[in-house]
Length: 76
Image (cartoon, rainbow, N blue to C red; front, side):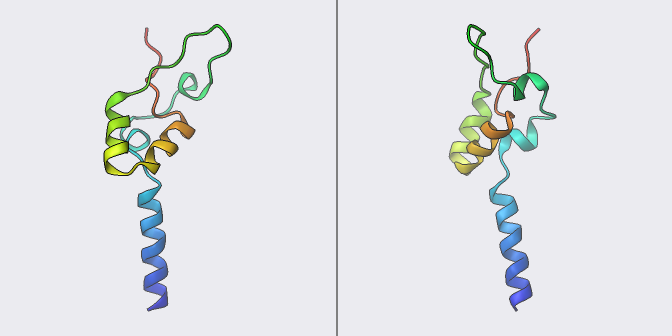
């Protein structure tokens, strides 16, 4: 019983720490990971991923911002 509870707890933790942009956004580019310097334009946020994070599981937004996955890839 303890082993099953431990397995379930780990599974729930993994699911709860996942987020929309991290899972569905594709690979995170160097542009998304790097914070803009002074005078540089700010990165744009993926609105759909942010709304999904807030509605489905708000701590997922924290993960997306921490990994940079919430930001749009560099536009050409």
